[in-house]
Image (cartoon, rainbow, N blue to C red; front, side, top):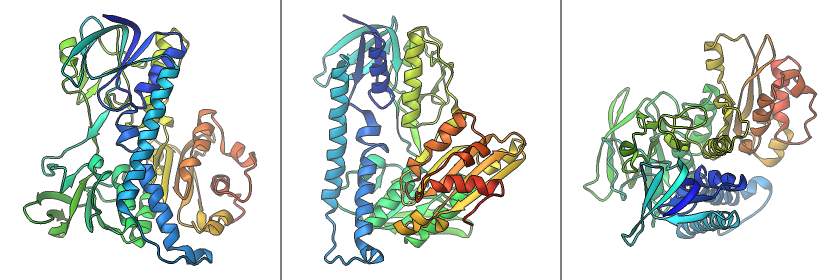
Length: 464
């Protein structure tokens, strides 16, 4: 039986990053993976392959609007299968990159379905049915999550699908219903609409992207409607009929029931953890509502067993899983570490327009009792945005009026997922609004909008 200092179960962005950091710290490390290195996020989820699809959609949109930039392009067409193939090629390349990194860091890769056992062991069943057992001083579980299936939306993988099937359809649907308007639903709605599919979003609550600041939700709805996407909020799909050529979805709205017809229904109603049949009950590891219970250092109730990423209570985001894994192994290595600040986790949605946010929304800050200074700068007033033809959206900042604490930052527009890190770093360093104002931002850039929004909050805005 092979013996390691650390064994990581799962090779997603939580698992492989954890393994690499463990190896850097001098710990003999192995990683167990049942399918593809890089996990669901890199191979099938929202991290890489969807971004490749979205890039193809962006290029197609540019070509179709070339006249807006004084250019003439004729004969613009698309090859849907080639777009899908490019996405798969990008994902495959990234998976090979993870394989290279694990080899470079001298991490043993054990392919097969892993089950945790007592005595800090993992039993691995290979594809050929053979089994082996590895033992470690520390077992880190990072098995991630999968698409959540609702009882009223049973997925057959053909007419009612999840995000995995949505990335590899052999034929582009003429009509698609997207159920759910979180990041997954919004990104696929944008992609398929851009490719020419007639898209309808059905959202249970009263606004799309409901976890975002309400101003962001309103702007997103305006932008999507302008792009031709139909949006039904305060609505619920209560049943689907797949007996015909397509699918008929019964939607309950405030005005009564409505039947929508489409080729495909995409269920994008969130995720559920991959905890079934991995041995937690046998070992005695505690869970609550489908999440593994851990402390600030990701230790479970059983010594020597840890859990990180989507299977714990934190936000189900790749960068969160990576950060948790690094902190976990650094604690194992007796380094001085501080608990993760879950109030300063950025969230991003990669549609057009993009969404990026960190910290409290305006409503949350008011509910918490803060007296606020709120600033907002529209990209319609930005020189760079006008020159780029990307005037939709804004930057919104929220400060505590008493001490100047940067409570939240919310952006919607072109390239904002690359801009949000300024707010994350500023909040980490306890930056005040006046310090942001005195930090010179380059002109002309989209990032100037951050400075201008802060100036608006303090009554000093120049370009509004």
